[in-house]
Length: 242
Ligand code: F6R
Image 1 (tube, rainbow, N blue to C red):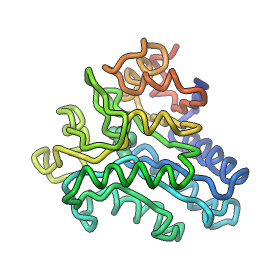
Image 2 (image 1 turned 90 degrees about the horizontal axis):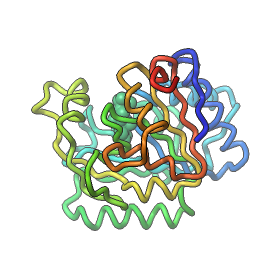
Image 3 (image 1 turned 90 degrees about the vertical axis):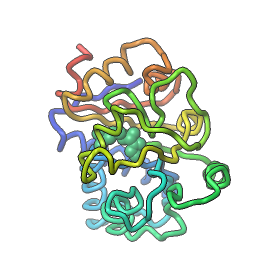
Image 4 (image 1 turned 30 degrees about the vertical axis):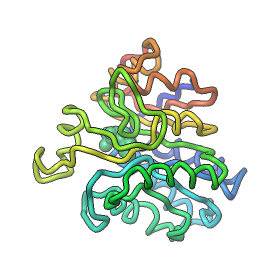
């Protein structure tokens, strides 16, 4: 794992945007795996700025999001579909056929999950997967547990994740209890991974991911087995790495 410690959230966002732009510069038809949540907002803002200045071109890029709540309507302000439309696909003008996210309205969940895996394969696999991390070490909605799913699946949110994500909803009861998420195997198949974390509340999870033993109790620690991972953190999130 390569570790980059940046001064603050803004520097982290700029450095991450530079890495993503460089990869697209090398491969204009790159396939990106994308995360939602608070952490990548700065990265998306910097990428939109760079695209508007003509420094990076997303017209050939295909994207696959990690996850979506289930059940949820696309128009819901809390859906990840809505988030992506607001912060990334919309401002960049990414054409809908190139922007993929699991369907949180689907009746046939097993079908949605296997189609999603197939679409990723048909696109040639993910070149660069962007990840955030939960306070409990989750990536996507792969929560700590004895058995982790390899492929896209219907996941149950842990109590910690429901509590953390309740800030986006009216209250804790309004947070969906389930989500459709790429599995650890889907994530590990990406050719390159960029894990971002900001703030002291992520410090323990980052410490365990990077320095701890590889365990399903900390799903992100499985990234230790991936050949090309960059962990980019601000100083606050890096305090358990010393
Ligand atoms: C979001 C996702 C989650 C988040 C994680 C951190 O698509 O897959 O794993 O990356 O919960 O969320 P934030 O960035 O809001 O702290």
